[in-house]
Each structure stands twice: as structure tokens, then as C-alpha cells.
Image (cartoon, rainbow, N blue to C red):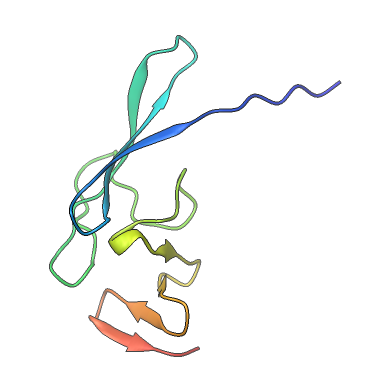
Length: 92
């Protein structure tokens, strides 16, 4: 029998909707930092230490401006994709 557990991710967001710090409860029930994000003005993530995970596949993929970071490294804004590394919009 497989037992699934539900875990919540708590986030500190700035006034633009950017997820700056993500927390989750560990096995002891204590909150621990799982993800940190510090952005350049056009959305590229600063790489600072072990906790920074700017790549796809972290706990919560909604990052810069509250938009989802895709596997391609682009942010999904609905009709267009945003490339934060060059600060431009593109279409795939």
C-alpha cells in the first residue's frame, strides 16, 4: 500500500508577485527554507549559494512575476514566452 502525504509550500512574495523565499515543513514539523530567488531587473535569477534554484524542477515553478518557469528556461506569460537571460519576448 502506498501512503501519500500532503505538504504545503509557504512563500514570501514581493510587491510584483515574485516568489522570493519558499518554505516547507521538514519531517520534524519545523519550517525550513527550500528555495530562494533574487532577480536582476529583467528577471534573470542571481545564483547565490546552495539554496538558489533558478532551474526548472524545484518545488514550485512559479517564480518571476508569478509566472511559470518552463523546461526551456523561458517564463510562460500565456500568449508569449519571456527569455529572462536576454530580457526579450519570444515565441516558440
